[in-house]
Length: 133
Ligand SMILES: [Zn+2]
Image (cartoon, rainbow, N blue to C red; front, side, top):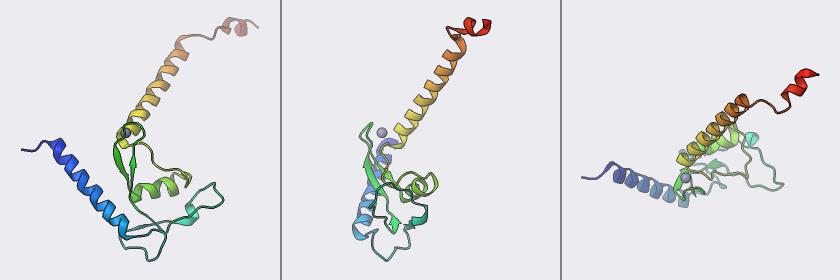
C-alpha cells in the first residue's frame, strides 16, 4: 500500500517529466504556435526594460521556491493571468510556491489585524492635547 503522500509526489514527478519533455520540443519564440499552447497577447504585456523578448506563447515553467526550496510549476495559464490580467511586469517571475504564498498572505493578514487591534486599544499619546485645543 502506498501512502497518499507518496502517490501524490509520484504524480507530481510524472507531471514535471512531461513538462520538461514538452519544453524541449518547442521554442516559444518561434512559429508555429502548438495547439495546446496559450498564446501571448503582446498588447496586454507590461514591461520596463528597453529590450525585452516577448514569446509567442506561454510554456509551463519550473521554479524553485525561494522560501522552502520546493520545485513548483508555474503554469502557462497562471503566467497569462499574472502578466495580462494582474499586469505584473514581464521582468517578474514566480518565486514562491503555493503553500508559501498562502502562508505569507496569512502572516500579512494576521499582522494587519494585530496592528489594527493595537491602534484601537492604545490612544495617541497626545490625544488630550489635541482635544483641548
Ligand atoms: Zn515554498
